[in-house]
Length: 107
Image 1 (cartoon, rainbow, N blue to C red):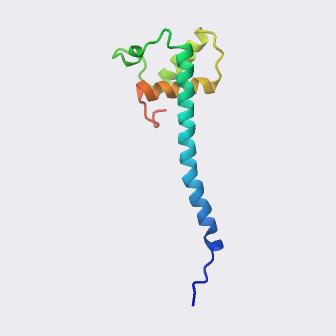
Image 2: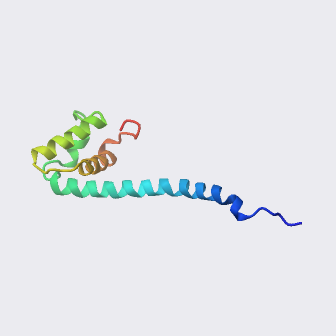
Image 3: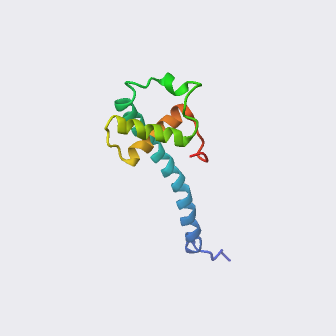
């Protein structure tokens, strides 16, 4: 006798599997897009004064993720850029990935 279990009995588990498989992939692609956008913002508005050496100095005042965010906010105000929170976050994620390497639990 053939197995009488149909696909419909597995359908809820299948949907849960799909959701948990897609969410991390989507989150990672958003992070990459945000980092690329942050790189563009930094390149257009910040890099003229901030060469890469500035971010890798041992005497840097940036010791925590909060320090980095405050510095980005301060400079965008100083330059009168009127950035939104997403702009600040994108630049933060770019700088963090490129230079500071704070882990996600610190953020």
